Image (cartoon, rainbow, N blue to C red; front, side, top):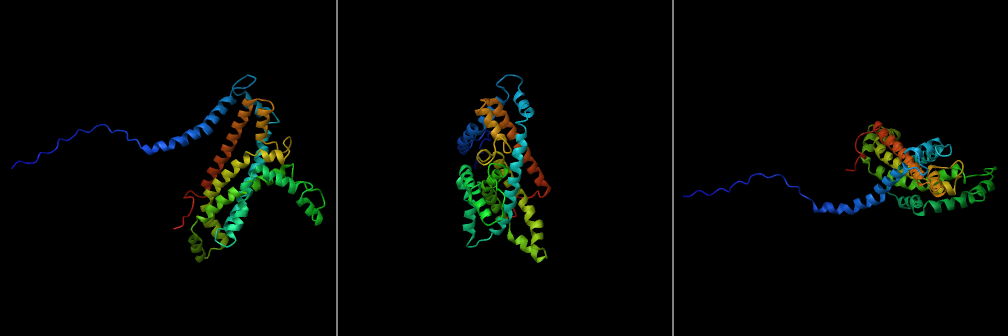
Length: 298
């Protein structure tokens, strides 16, 4: 009886590169990012090293940091962006805790808090000029109720811009914080309560460590949004005085002096300052908690 013939073994070949056809679906997104983000950034960075009036490659940056009308705009912008970020994120935490459980008022209150997102910065500024202006409803109400006798000035100064940043930035911070708060398993606090933990101890020992990563991301996004303030600083502030932020300095260099290289340099400095602050916040969150972003729901 003849034994079956075994197949001849095929010698191993070099592994071939397997291409996933679905990877081509990422191409439109990559082209979009390159066209609208990477190329403009690279072009602006290269332009900042080509001074309009000649000189060294660092001439625009030297001009910015030696001109007393330009470099203080960094401090002015930080004085607006940092308080707005702290207020938006700080107030969003108790509001999110109050609305984390379902009730018949939850959707209505949440809708009211999110409405400013649909208005836009210019419309918010126009409303504030009508409401907080010298002849607006708010000052007239304070005078009519004899609560404040002096002149109420909440527009065309620092406070007008800060209030505008809070009104326009709070909805984003609130929605992000609400998503993080509702993502924490409530049984963790219940278990702590059975062990005698007070509500304040539950917040400090359970909720806060789990919220810090999410609150850090909300603070980073709120800060970047507030740091790029421009319409509010022009419409509600004093562009030539206490609210002359970096974006105004860049706009003046580009559209008044037609020095686009200097404007690009100011934009690069803006991005660098934002990067430093965001990196500092992301590094500081490691001091609180290094685990997952949320506690999970089951």
